[in-house]
Amino acid sequence: MTDADAVRCWLVERTYTDRGLVDMTYATPDGSRAHRRQVSTAVMRQRGAETTAAVEVEAAELESVDDADTRERYAAEAERMRNRHDPGEEV
Image 1 (cartoon, one colour):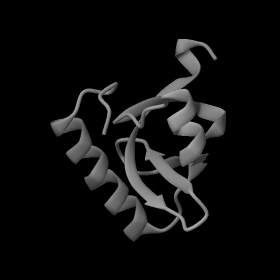
Image 2 (cartoon, helix red, strand yellow; image 1 turned 180 degrees about the horizontal axis):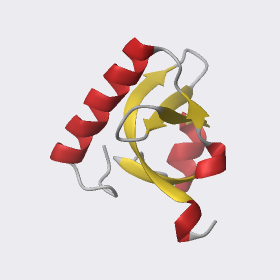
Image 3 (tube, one colour; image 1 turned 60 degrees about the vertical axis):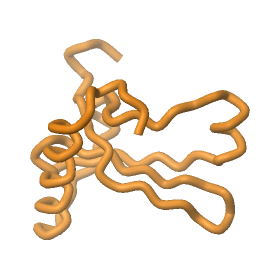
């Protein structure tokens, strides 16, 4: 991935499943595109992996957010995260 291909996305949603997984959604500041990750909590502990306020995502890996209410919610949460946290800060 080159810097030109990277898009900064902010953590807008995180849920924990009963199967020991963490579902994270990172979205663009305007909420129009999102990237979802699912990671095992056990693997995160083993690797010392952190959930950061923002990540760089290859543009081709972003999905369109079609629902207007979801877009609005993602944009509001991305703005809140940007105002409260540095991109690499653990949240």
